[in-house]
Amino acid sequence: MSMDIRKKIASAALGNLKADVIITNGILVNVHSKELLYQKEIAINEGCISFIGDCSHLRGDETIVLDATNRYITPGLMDGHMHVESTMLTVTEFAKAAIKKGTTSIFMDPHEIANVFGLEGVHWMHEEGQQLPLRVFTTVPSCVPATDNLEDAGAELLPEEIEEALQWKNVAGLGEVMNFPGVVHGEQKMMKEIDATIKAGKTVTGHIPSKDPGLLQAYIASGITSCHETVTREQAIEKVRLGMHLMIREGSAWQDVKQLAPVITKDKLPTENMSLITDDVYPQTLEAEGHLNYVVRKAIQEGIDPVTAIQLATINAANYFGYGNNLGSLVPGKYADLLLIDDLEKMEPSTVMINGEVIYDEGKYQIDFPAYSYPEKAKQSVKVKGPLQPDDFLVKTNREDITKVNIIHALENNARTKQSSAVLSVENGRIQPDIDQDIIHLSCIDRHHQSGAISNAFVSGFGIKKGAVASTVAHDSHNLLVMGSDIKDMAYAANELINRGGGMIVVENQKVIAEVPLPIAGLMSDQPVEKVTKQVQELERAWAHLGCNLHAPFMTFSLIALPVIPSLRITNRGLADVDTFSLIPLELEME
Image 1 (spheres, rainbow, N blue to C red):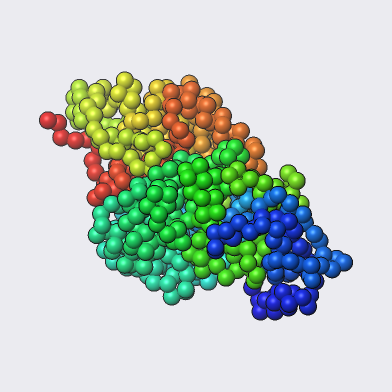
Image 2: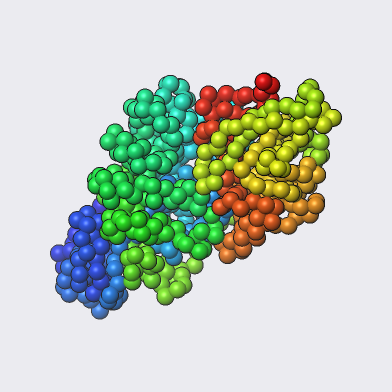
């Protein structure tokens, strides 16, 4: 905010200027004092709050008066960690879905597109965000690729590129540092990134699922100040005690509010160093439940005081990233990003104002959103050596009759997997799946370098009994992931996605029964949220038709290739043991 604007705001507070807008008769939610202040008026000048109280001395002939009788006035909601790509929408389409639900600022980590197109892809999304009414802050992806020796991504972000991006306007810091082993052991690349961020005066955000106290404290000592991978009350208490900013996540698949709310409601820990975030949200959640307002609502349902819950989704995020002087609360000198809400427990805004302008009111947007066109290059991201054949998905073995193999076991509503083993039959030198044991084929194909590299393994936990599924959303390197009980359907699904330029697909008997086209980097749709939501709902039904009854199964599936969260994963190079950060054989010794 410029000094000229601040001078005008101060002059207005003294009554020397008339207000552009005055909001009257509302109930002000003060996230500093955690009070509800009744019959307070709010004056707005130059898009900022200039005065709170009796604003009669600021009324002029041209002052717009908004009546907020019986409505609460809250700061606009701020999501401190999220991946727009997970919504399958462009930044513009996401903004259309989120602003009307009360989100006025996001801190996005575009590391999905970074793994496909590098810094160029990050710049596309960042540039798109800067033209929107939604305040889009970017954290520069830190781990591209997520690991150096377990997989092949489409691009790499070097410390020099990260240092360059940290200078862009509205870049808030370093995205979640997932390579915690590299951090704690002083890997040069990671330390350069962290050092550059700290020297730039910006925030280093974290991601550490490890329970080891030594690893955690070494990670914090390295300069990382937050974590959103906390899933137990005990972990939350430990991180807060160590000065870490606790990001409490509630997304479409990973839902941690219920487990972590007791650190506030029962343990009575101070809340100033905590925030509510979404991380990954699917379009159907945006449409049916909302965005960050849904997380606040869930926190209230779990016993957190409504004003505290709003604090966790506003000023705390602003302060964590160093934007608390301008955003996050309703006090003089801050931007007028605010919501009018009838019922705090429902958290459904009737009016959304950003920068002092009414953006959404009476069920419709009051502005037109600018268009943004991704370059043609963005839609040419699926690069494979050639069409895939059914035999490409078979695993050869020298053993006869039976063999013992490692199995990736998927866990519902959990980013983690479990490493297990099973004895499978062998036919003609090929290892066979076992539907009765819920064990099916799983393959990961390089889709960036036309190398023809493919790794084959087996997975359980999805309950699929027929057909196949495939996806170019495969965190974080986003290679082509295929799973199924029928190798003909697997080949068909993979080839159809290749021809479409990416997306998610379900196939049975060599026919597509549902799909979500994602032509932008193989990650995002170019369609509005309503259409994408319908496509995803059809995809969900198709997964269930194949026998899968998991909640958000394609989210779980997309993380099967993520070699930074325990325990066992598949990459285009093979089976990755995340506990040892090494590739391991598929077959085990027979007892």
